[in-house]
Length: 167
Image (cartoon, helix red, strand yellow):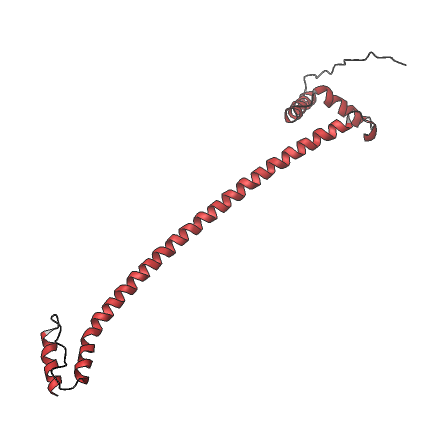
């Protein structure tokens, strides 16, 4: 049998041509994605796969699994960070929308309160004169107990109230 020294170096030659250039591009792309691997590691993995060797007899299988799981964890962490970012952005947008709606509702409530106050003021002014008429019409002809008319009462109303008192 052939005896090798402990460290054997073999070379791989990529010829100019579409097939070899495509393969070399794939190798470079793969190695960029996994900076912890070398071209030698990639060649060994390819040889193991192409020679159909059982997974259990591969050397450094534990290291490969550990490396793969670390990469998987990093991918999951990245996905989780992206998910959190999208979630917080969405919730922030919803919160801003709710704050705008609450501001609009507060403004509407303030406008309704102003309108209600104005309506109450208008009603109290409108009901002042008839209330005086009711008081005067129900009062007895005793002029001593009758309150003096307010100073800002319409002169026409005051003249009419005299006739009501006599009546």
